[in-house]
Amino acid sequence: MNILYIDTFLQSMNHSNSLMPKLFKKVGNVDFYGPGYVSNRILASGINKFIELRNEYSFLVIGPNFPVVLNDKKLKYGNISEYLNWIKRYNVTASNKKIIKDFLNDILDTLNTIPIKNKILTLFLLDVYAVNNDQLNSFQEKGFYILAQDKNFVSSIDDLPNWAFKEKHFIQKRNRIKDDWLNFITQNKQKIISMHHFIDECEFNFSDVKQRTKDISIPGASYYKRAEAKRKFLSNKIKPNSNFITKMFSLGDRLRLPMFSNSFLLEFYKNTYKINLRKSKLTFTARGGFGMTVRKFFEIPASGSLLMCLPPVGFEHLGFVHNKNYILTDIDNLVENYNYFLKNVEVTQKIVDEARNLVFVNHSTSARALQIKKSLEKITKGTFKGSEWINGKYRS
Image 1 (cartoon, rainbow, N blue to C red):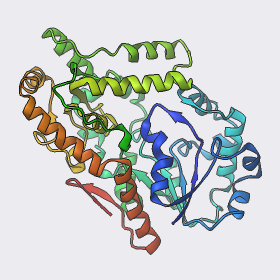
Image 2 (cartoon, helix red, strand yellow):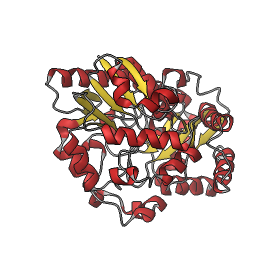
Image 3 (tube, rainbow, N blue to C red):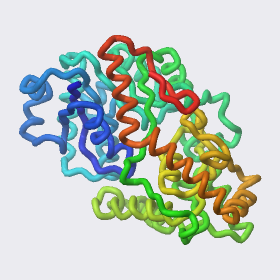
């Protein structure tokens, strides 16, 4: 199967984002097009010329860095400074803003007429509660297939927990938050290729829990429940693994220093995060208010640390089972679970091994590629009716 993959090449904080090209190389025969993937001379000739000189493609895949949720006219009239500034602030790229802008406009001008039957948008990193009906109607009109989490992993606003409304991220977006996305993926199930974060095989760590030097870690941004957990630990004289580097990078970013757009600093940041997980016997994390399945829920088991968490929406459908491969943990049983699993290392190791194996078998780069390939083959045969995760199984 021949695939044309269109995007801007970026080194990103988010590993799943950066791994997408590798993922699709495992799916089929791929040509890449966009700033950083091909020369500026080839870009200047435009996408149609690029396609003319190559084989016929079964699929056009628009990668996660392409701003498909922006209005076409805003892009065409040059109002994309916010998006371009985001690229330059939080990613490493060798391409300048003009090259990226010209590329975006070329794709948007020709997207409807590009002679590739099956077009796929990569939206599993989308802020799904802020997307609006105008954007969704555009996706539907163009007949896009969509790589995104299926309806089993998205909660309606009415079903969000009360504490979700205290989240900083929720408060900032309160006037924009709607159920438009949930309604869209429910009504267009036949267009959804269920997609979640995934872990590359080189990220897995198989070291024994006993030899780890840190007892507990709480990585990542201070979502409401994570911040509450830190306070609970400290009030019980338990000190989680330090997030000093994360705090320093956050401060540097607020001062507009190139913390995430410098290649060395970005790799240092990502490696420090990995090392902290690999040193930790136990790791606590919690869903944000929206309940989306962020990458930490896969990274922690892959690192060989015990996943103690308040799980995201639909976690059981990805194969995660309390007391088998993770420990359901909230503030009221946080210290109790900490003490028990530090003391009972054999029990801890068994759960860690189960979790790591689950992620390796079902949520690695190779596994995710096979799942997507299964769906794409059905699309080419005309038998695809949508895909979803149900009780630990990918169904397409």
